[in-house]
Length: 392
Image (cartoon, rainbow, N blue to C red):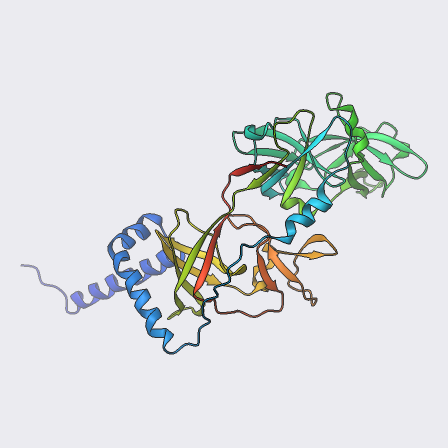
């Protein structure tokens, strides 16, 4: 006959309780989709009506903004600024195709464009923005294309080092994460100087007229030391912030259009509950009859925050101040797009930088604005990875 030690049952219940609490904490911090979906299947039908009832009850104690009947479609000023600053110089026999940027990783030297075979893009085409040479198309798919920027590891780009008194030809080699592109294969090493202008030089198979486009890669910068025997020159060039929205591809033959635009999806939404028992007034529950998972919530063209959880036709939004978007925000300065620096004391009108489903150019508000309570009628947005050909 077996006998349990005194308190064994109580200790077993304690261990099970501790294990359950730890498991819930892990699931909350690192959610597993399988468990999350299973819990929603069981409790999902009850969560939305309870949340809506909570919203109705809380509205008796909260002073909430009312609906605005004058709803307007928002158009971003970033589009006009990018087109004004970004179109390269016209050259005979070459047409510049305007293509939206879906994603860019400057450190690794890779860019993803929102057009491909459907826009007659092909590998080898050069990509530019204004007077800046960015790289070449490396791979093309039906609706997207990948660009190898000049600094991608192994990428070779011909250039000319030009000073006031002399010039010499060379080739720069991209190093990716290892650092700036290295200038090598100098035609005349005695003509290589620091701060020399780096003019892009076309390949033999490129259209000869592209040499007249005046594209450049910034300036040369000395690196290393003569004493250690590792002296050399590297490329000092920054990708313009406006190039994160759209770039221009040189083509000698085109289709019916020269402009593509990303299909930004928008749907009307309604506020269910403002605030929560845990996160307070920094969250908002909304519902929307849309067939996509939105990424951003806006209140009449002004972004409220990002969607953090979405189930079928409703979800939760994390409300953010304009400055809380940090490096995901940009502003216009004398017609040029610049990245927002939260440490700056200057006040700017901020816009979304884009990426990860967030449309580019949505208005965030002024950098010093505080958190605001969204009204009843709202909008949800998503920037999917597809394009729409616009005739122009």
